[in-house]
Length: 221
Ligand code: PRP
Image 1 (cartoon, rainbow, N blue to C red):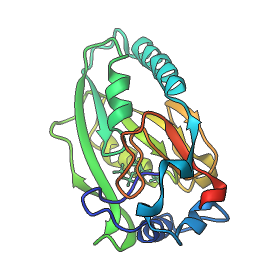
Image 2 (image 1 turned 60 degrees about the vertical axis):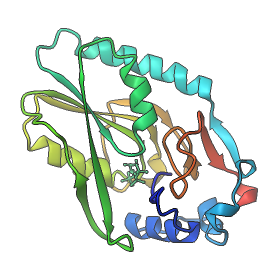
Image 3 (image 1 turned 135 degrees about the vertical axis):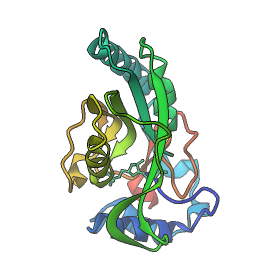
């Protein structure tokens, strides 16, 4: 799933070790564990298989947009859709085009790494919103909620800014990895504990531009 710096493109073993530390749990007997043996540059598209197709994503995004439109229709507050970069970018771009309401967009980026090596266990802002959200309806958009650490932090942090409302839309949810339970108001798909990329999610900075969600094949890790 998302992580790593596309400019730096660190080796996969580094990326996976950091992810393991951040979540404070082992990856378990998953494909990710074996993937540490192989640098990211040696993976090809053949190592991944489609988990959620382009068509399935587009169909679900239409449904979510309609649901959000219905829920927010008639509200007097300004609606601000807040994307959590970088993974949100494709989902948010598609989702807002199916919300048939006036809305504003803003973005933030957070990190739970300190110096890129070890997690402090504390999520910190790399950059924050460009506007106040007080008395506004805020819809936070994530590509995936994995442990829930990021979303849990953001709900608390944005909540104290006194928005009129604060909800979460996430394309994916991996309940098997939950450490901080988070209520997801608009969810695209629940997935198993698989290493996924595409449609915004990266592998060491790559593959965010894939149209579908791909999972690392167990026999290719
Ligand atoms: C991913 C994803 C979420 C977070 C979810 O971001 O976009 O923000 O991890 O994980 P969690 O539920 O365990 O906190 P990442 O830090 O990989 O950055 P990216 O969006 O730039 O890929």
